[in-house]
Amino acid sequence: MDLLSVKLKIGDREYPMKVKPDEEERVRNAGKFINDQLKSYREKFGIDDKEDLLAMVAFDCVVAKLKSDESHSAVDDTTDDKIDSLNKLVKEALS
Image (cartoon, rainbow, N blue to C red; front, side, top):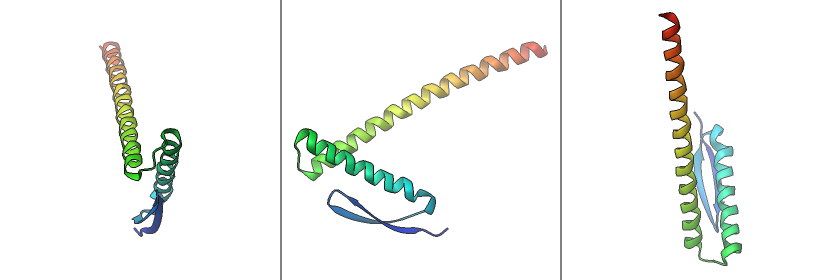
């Protein structure tokens, strides 16, 4: 599979990277999200230090990822419980 060469500007730096064609939009959206968050934190907290801003964005992204993982886990558990209940009902009906 051919890879695309893209350059993302995050903060004041450009990052060249190679991505799969079907990942390009996701990668560009991630770069835009990071830049939007940097701008938001800069305006909200008056912080100009790039490292501090990037650390804040990284922290918030990890918190959101952990929250999403917990939510997915809860859905998986509920789904497993429902499947177990349905299997039990089917076994009882076939007995």
